[in-house]
Every structure is written in C-alpha cells, then in structure tokens.
Amino acid sequence: MAKKRMLSEQQIHLIAKALADPRRHEILQQIGACKDTASCADIREFQPVTAATLSHHMKELENAGLIKITREGKFARMELQRDALKGYLAHLKKI
Image (cartoon, rainbow, N blue to C red; front, side, top):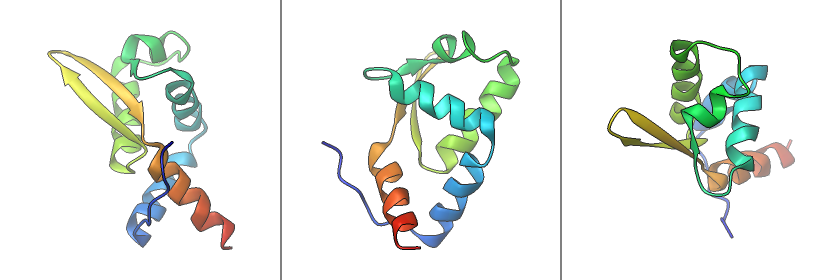
C-alpha cells in the first residue's frame, strides 16, 4: 500500500496545473488503471493525439511527480506515483 507523502507548495501547484487539463486527467486515470505500468501505445489507443502532444502531456504529469517514466530504448513505460497523488488529496482535505 502506497503511503501519502508531504508535498512542497511548488509540487502542489504543479499537480493542480497538470490535473486542470482534462486530457491529462484522463491519461492519469488510464495509467492508474493499468496493473503495473502503461506504455505510450496503451495510452495512445484511447487518446486521439499525436505522439508529440502525448509526450507533452506525459512530461507535465512527470514534472508534477504524478507519474514515473522509465525509458527502454525508444520506448517509455509510465507508472502512477500513488504517494504523490495521496499527498495531494491530503492537502485538499485540509481546505
């Protein structure tokens, strides 16, 4: 079970910005629905965007700390960082 972690104010703002985009929210849900990791091909199957646009969204989610991207040659695998998501939710509960 992933524990929640304390987030900096900067990371809280990055997460809020990343999740404000509906497509990134959908992508995060797709990654979270995968057992371990999701590939770009898994995500592109349900997202009608170019590879460059998908790459941009993935970078925003990675910069916010919501996903971890592992590169395997020219391929990438994404993993949801549940501790960051739980930390963000804990922050929202304080409001």
